[in-house]
Image (cartoon, rainbow, N blue to C red):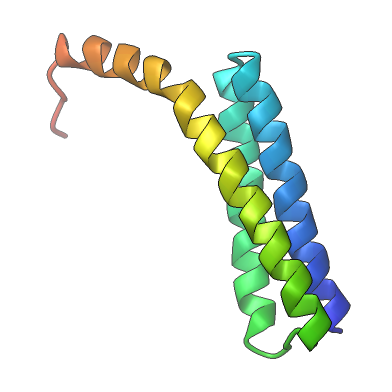
Length: 99
């Protein structure tokens, strides 16, 4: 069953690569969709990790996968900064509405 956990890490990495590709293409809607997929996968991983554990060799693989995910995330954030600044500028002109 520990293979299922490592498969979740691999799926999260795959989704982070798709996010990075979308960010490189400035397809921010796709970035958001992939981010949603990652969130679901992370939640599923959390649920399963309470009842399952990785084998020692899988922990090493997990570490390598997590490092790649973090590198992808850093590149996505770097590419998103100009877009986020534009979004901030647009929302600064329109005060938030209170319901």
